[in-house]
Image (tube, rainbow, N blue to C red; front, side, top):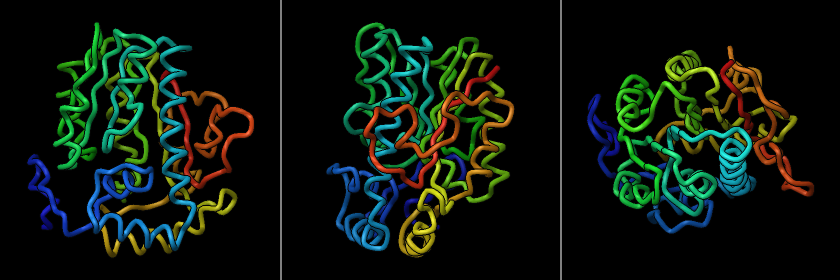
Length: 270
């Protein structure tokens, strides 16, 4: 067991000798919360697959558009952000509470640096509530139990799963996680999801060798999936227009950035 892994149910411990996704992602989007090893691995991956920085930025912009859309146009006032990663500009609670100050947001992650930044996330103001849950995506029951202390599961919730299911290597296990969480939220709730793909029509074939290098030199291991596998996560839900598309193109303004091999979609529970 490496230092950044933990026994079942226990918090992860910080390991600065091995690159970690949350910190490398932070490096790719221009943040400052990373170590030399994260920068070194991030640079190597970007050298193999230069589009990775644009994927990271496109995913972040997708988050902003999705949260604003749900808060402004769909009236969502509760957000469960699973796998939030390191805080940066315009986090989920900031966007939602800017639209509706009474919004309640729960962040879920188990990365040690994210945990250290929890106080930053816990600064929602006004009538809203911002909370943090230390839990692993592979333990949906723990997520639901702890999130219920802040969120009312009798009212619609937007479940945010951006770039997180790609760390659950078994596709059936990943589907179980989505089904379990979406079963707990009522009709009118939403699933917001992004996921890397190897589909060639969006340039995903270049991710395969870069992911292989990542899995040999960093943690946690990652996988890309086909659009067919990714859209299956929305089984039983109604996809909103424009459906499953490159996250850079989901409800983007004209002249939006180029297509990236990271699918994004939003669906509603009927």
